[in-house]
Image (cartoon, rainbow, N blue to C red; front, top):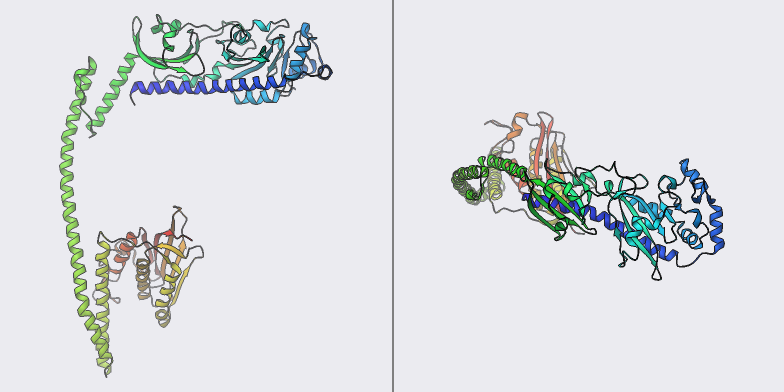
Length: 620
């Protein structure tokens, strides 16, 4: 993001944060106005008012205020409830029936005001001022700490801002920053007039602590020379990232810090200049320096947020960013040529260096493209060789099947003739050799199919229970003949109906079970299915485990066990025959179906093969 846009985005963020808080304040004021109109709509009976005053112990205290003495004493002892309100009621008004009726109507607003106060972190005071010169405040305050009994509320700035003469529009009005009478520092006040039957009756006000409304961390500057601040339309300073002192100001004094005193570049600038547009930017110069100034208006208020940054610092920053870009370009990053003539002074040298880097990168990029082209050609040649190999294996396998079928057929015919023991032994050996050759041809054909780029797994709904039942029937009888226990079981959590390639799953499990039976002379062969924890809401991850108590595999052979033409039992006189294609086919099938396979084995103890496969969820 360009520097200008980044700074403007920061200003918009500040304006948005402040305006959201101000909007909530205005919403609360409109609520209090409507609530008060409703409470004042009916006049209470004089007896009710008298009973309230008597019950709450109203009398003129030693400070000269007419108030509830028991509540004041409880407050001074820190025993008063947090939702109590206080009253500013001079003794000469204690017999004013209108003043008494109005305060009686507002007496139970403590809980509502407490909730508002908690939801406005920057709020200090919420108070109602009546035309009769009485007032209600929240939180509760010891009156003598802020004002005198004869305090004239009609002279207070909030009253003046919304009285009919100054606010015929009857809108919410905001005060300039001023020092709080009760010691809460610099505050601003929002006030709304109260009209009943078109007659002005008073107002509601909410005082906000500027320090909490505009938190320092919101205005904090990113750069050493940067100053960010907020002013009103008259140029009075509201808040600043550098702060400003209020120690010498008196209670109620309006905190006027002129724009010209905020920063050296505003010496001859009229504040109204920044209120002509919603946002803007320009360069302003002082006697010694030049500054980039940007601003953003704050909604709901005649305020504007302004930031000023030294142009020299911006140039220095740009220089550093250019140098960083040079480093990246030297490592091979691409970039466009700069128009060096558009730079002046010291920036010209940076632009030339940048262009030299881009040229170097262009040369390197051409070399890289040439290398990539050669690699692409080699990849194409390798893929073509792989296709030729697959086609050869496939054709050869098909060509071998025809004579093999004839040989197997002749063996079957020989079995139907009269054979002595020696002849039968010769036929058995020939038949076993033909059987092994058939398996080899099938494995070669399957390997060619799997390695073909066109091979895709099927996605159909099938029953896992039926697959297991078929395997149980296929291996149960041979195992019992060899006195092997064959256990094929499925955990109850594993779903029966799943979506996937039933044929290839059966082939994988068949190959693994065949190997287990083949290499196990005693003990058991186990196939088990378990449901793994779900990582995708649309898939079932199922773990198939094939374990046996056979001869096992040496650890040094495990890494190459799934390589083509590899067997754990090597040598010409090995006890277990085979070409070493079965596990290679299994690994390719599992990979094609999106799973993985691993093995754990100990010589003389047995082996366990683990196959994890993902399956789709079948609809009910």
